[in-house]
Length: 224
Image: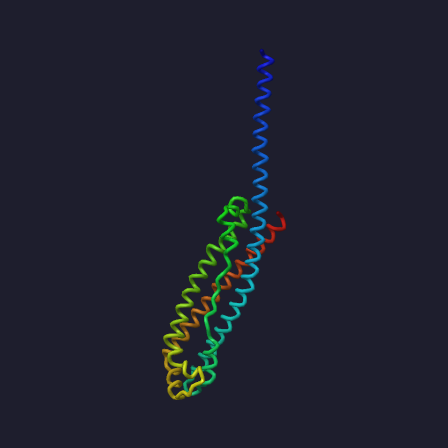
């Protein structure tokens, strides 16, 4: 009888260990699959980050040129007696409001699956989240403000008074000299320039974070 119970206990233990081992192997396999998928996610996010770095550097350059053009315009109208209409019109035509909107598809896909938070490195997750959930969101808000300020500056003020001259039609020099010499014009340019400068600062902060994330992703990919 004792042998029967002993044999039954051993069989039960063997079955239990077999089931536990199969669960362990299945969990191990699933974890490896998810980590491999996360590695692919990181490679895709890195591709997006590299593309965004090129784009944001280009946008920074464009806005810095716009900032310099604003300064040239302000120098031109500083002395009313020396206003150069042709130079002002050329500078105004070169203005704009180029904005940046980052690529978020790969990040959102990885985040939605839960892989990034469940299997990613804490430092990597932290920096990626800061980029997409803080810097990109903050920059989007600033892009919207930049658009609003610029549209008001161009559509409701500058273009209303200079579009005919910018398009090559005949214009009254005296009218434009008076327009450019008014303090309101200087104030509008200063407001617009201030928004450009502020936007450049936000762009550069985001660019710095892009490089931080790039380094973290490269380290993670190389070590996993």
